[in-house]
Length: 399
Image (cartoon, rainbow, N blue to C red; front, top):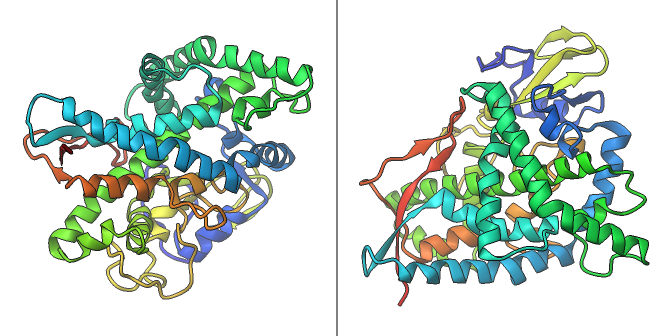
């Protein structure tokens, strides 16, 4: 067993690649009860385990079918990217290059998919701006265990944001879908609200609000972090390997997909320690733990395991080949029964022949000659891990 890596929460934890995988796949380890965030996420998919989790997940899997993934990418993402970059030409500061805050820009792009995925009927520009305001407070609740701000105040803000999100956007759409189910069934493409509104779901209003809040922050948060990190890491790589910039732009090459995978390995967008609660006596990190104890999977340590990544595992290298066969996204989306349901949206799905949001948007930035902007400071979220909320760049304006 590897030496335990010191971390924010000193619980028994696995650190090697194999042991982390075994812990995440264990059926007798449940998501840690999130007492502080219970008013916001306590009934959402991320908090469930066992039969309740399986049932909810099975009902929502249809949202990530090959047809749905193609629709998100072709009908929503691609036009959104074109329109967002074209709109930069209206900015007056510089006729050649536009200043962009990368995380905010990406969040607005991904928000279009999130709105369609959830099933929000109001989708105008003013509606998107209003929904955007709910994201940061809800993310703070999702990360509450790692927050460096007052948790009581953060949860209060998140609960208020969730209530307003429900009243202004979710409830009207939810009631429309409930009425459609009563009158013979929902005939439009499936979305989260139509699944939750089914009479067979057993979902109440509070649970529907929490599930939609989870989908909003999970779809935006993971993708925005992944894209920001990938742009930064690939930019540094291309400074040292300028010929590889052409590979980034080549949609027939898998180089950019490998860059995204390597960025996910080096900087997984999930929490630094995935916490679980033992539902039976077990051994974790070489320590016996009793039922009810909190244990952890140290994803960052697993992604640097020299048995799997023997050559400078801390370094970003999209050309590396692991010493053993591993899944392409490692543990960046978890593993086992709680593997992130939205993973195919971010990294694509061979069944759907989709590239994924991350590669698609990163390529668009490099096609626009993205460059870091040293004149403006970078800023991190108020958490004990590195997550950009301001990452200034400039891009070439298309004329």
